[in-house]
Length: 123
Image (cartoon, rainbow, N blue to C red; front, top):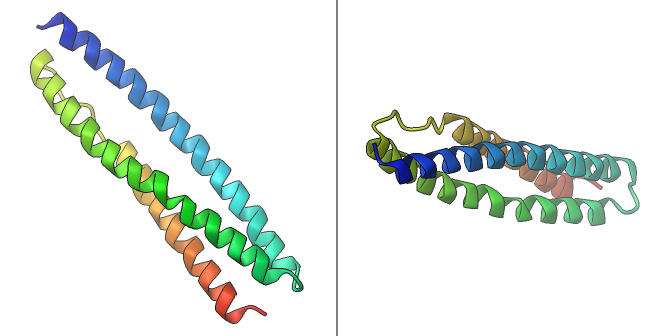
């Protein structure tokens, strides 16, 4: 077994765990910010459109990390397959990251639909 491949695999696994944890914290922060935006938009009729635009803008900005996570997941998958062959081990399972990405995309769609509804129907 190639020692450098083994060290690289260990480093990649640690990085994967760290970034997965960071993604979960980021999603929770995003949900908290959007929860406050939803509350403000629903409670304040006078400034509702402004809060809706602010919330929609924050939601649109959140599409960037979701798309970059898709790109990163594909790169990691290729790296883990390569390192798995070099170290004669099973490749690291990417299902938790994909579940996180798909769940984030689902939350994103729900919030975008909410902001569109509030902008068009809410007065």
